[in-house]
Image: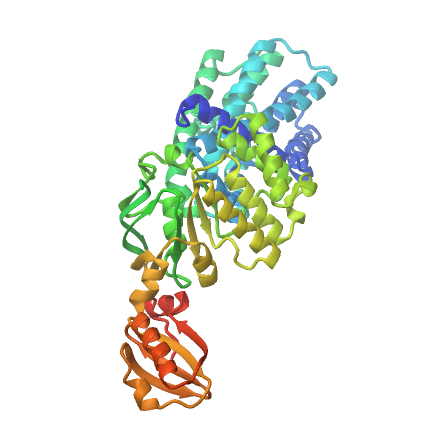
Length: 251
Length: 309
């Protein structure tokens, strides 16, 4: 066995992911935050009298759910583990920092997909018709990877106080929801809003979800997919690089 | 004997403080090496650099020939760590913690289960294996940490104050396990400020003070080197002439305390022989005789500059 081989490190990252799911994801508050927050935002806009079509809002609800669940816990895992000194244990084990980050990402991806599947069932139950299932499946997987990578990127500041990271995370996440065409169609955004929307990965996922349910889209599907893939690679590479620098400062 | 740990000019700086300053030493295969020093001397920082937890700012450390800075995974695969703070996952059970270690070290599942069972039984935790660690006492957590460090059968074990603050039962269990592991061939790097522990376990000790190594040697040599003059405490059955006692071969000075004579000897062997013949000549049998060589405590306090007034 070569412990430095990529396959070996991926297997060890999977062990870290299983640990994360057991410890951090199967907790009431996390599940509640992941499901209730998007539902409340959805209801606020649905009942707000703006007369947006239900299909549009349900698609947005799916987008939000995946975004919030995939970034709900991953930013706080490093600070939690730093505080509990378990990060020191991981750092002394034969796993690379990249494997630790990948493990956190895998857990986040699975959690995001799991909760989003529940939202999908709700949407289908409310009568929404899925027109492009394969595109939706691929989009959910890709976006889950992208948002999870963003979550681990948010964990980079070397603080072991989870609330600091969560505050930073919320400061970034909430504005993104409002500029990504979730509640206001991209077509209705002003020019500056459209310019900001292009910078948000959530925009492309929301566009793909709308295409999957309504057949309508703002960007061509390949552009949405390419943009999500590019954001995923960028966030992952930057997160791994920066965690390499910040990890020793947490000890 | 081959070298398991080779440290050359290792340095660590935190801001304006040099926590570890140009430290160099080796640890040989199958030995128990004690790393001693007062609080804040740099013991834990040294251990953290050796185990790849924090990077060093200068110098190098090789573990089984692997540079811990350049090939950390290869080096870490071969050692286990018992850190200063117990750091098992408290939301997992003991069994889940051990299985996690098995996966992180690439131990086959069947072997990992067998090792976990054996270790938990040996350390008296098997009955509590399915309980979450948050309900464990400090001693139980420390025993579990040791089990986690040993699951992959490491050839080298780093321990940072493993018995600090533990109850006697846990402390004895851990020390006896360390002796057994060493007898089976495991090299042990033990950080401690417990002199008694170091005295009982270690083949060699290194003493660090203010980030610098001040001595490295075998315990007895270190003790002998610290004080060339040994002390002998002797009592005789009957009165003896003090001036003649002071002039005996090998004796540098005498002092009487009650019915005992405190003798300073530059050559303890010669002094004891002189005392025996002196006793015979004066018809005053020796009732008791103790050689009071400097203890590790004395050596430690002298070398770390913390000698009691």
